[in-house]
Amino acid sequence: MLGWKKGLLRYSLLFLTGYCVYLALEVTFRGYSFRLMGLTGGIVMVVIGFLLRHGMWKLQLPLQMMIGAVIITALELAAGLFSLEVLGIRMWDYRDEWMSMCANLICPRYTLYWFLLSGVAIFFIGAVDYYLLDIGHRPVYRMFRWKFAFPEARRIRQGQTADAETTVRREGRY
Image (cartoon, rainbow, N blue to C red):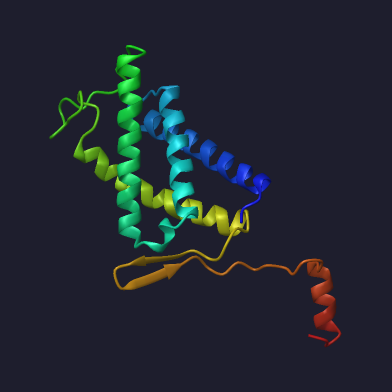
């Protein structure tokens, strides 16, 4: 079970990372962005992190990435419709893209990009949980018949410092 402090830290870190990365990607490729898209990126990371924490990690990696792409596309559509209908701002227009739909707010090309980007997000969330926050076990990713995982983390036992470990080895008690 995740304590409320560690949970708050985890989801805050995921939100801020998603917020900053989404804005950075938009500014890099378009030259500008909107804060609403940063909020969307933060919410995406929190939702994917929540789903990974509650069982999505058991699925094969391509299926996890597909779920991530659907989540990103759906939240991008919701943000686009909100900005268009409520705020009166068109943040982007996929009119020139193949099969653009829903008032030209989503298209298959960008869903493919979100599929690839969600793989990066899944690896990032696994690394944050395992290495930074010490939550759960080492993430193992499955893709068809293959399995791969992050390297094992060196963990020092509770109450024992690195100096104490060196002393124990030197004295031959190890």
